[in-house]
Picture: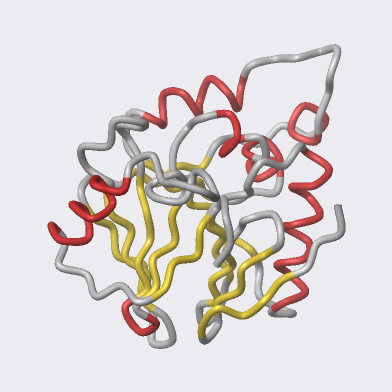
Length: 198
């Protein structure tokens, strides 16, 4: 699929596959690689680099470990990105990063790299003088115990996968989304979802 993007805030773009790109002073971070297979994941990472030329893509927040949110995971590890997720997901991701599939060699199999992982307990703030992104545990979600979502206070923007926009016509878990927003006292005016549309 062709990779395109639209700005959704200052230094923030939503890519056509569902990835959100966030610019910091000296690097770029991704929220998800959507439902991509390895070739598409590589194309999305390369597209993110063109949005902010000269700044490396260094981090990937994964909302949760389900297959449609981790299809690009091994490509991200092969590209040297640090994965951000809940502590117990690190166990799953370590297995995914090291599990051999000799009949289907991908970029990570051809050029092995270690998993770089940052754990989110309740809250992790990523901040410099140009950007602040708060990563929160999604708490009490029946679909995914270890879900995380991101909040950009300057844009009043939530970036999420499956918390409220898993379907186009109706939402499976809107109560847990509202609960999380109320619990963390967030002022949300916009959502950049992995599924659905901004």
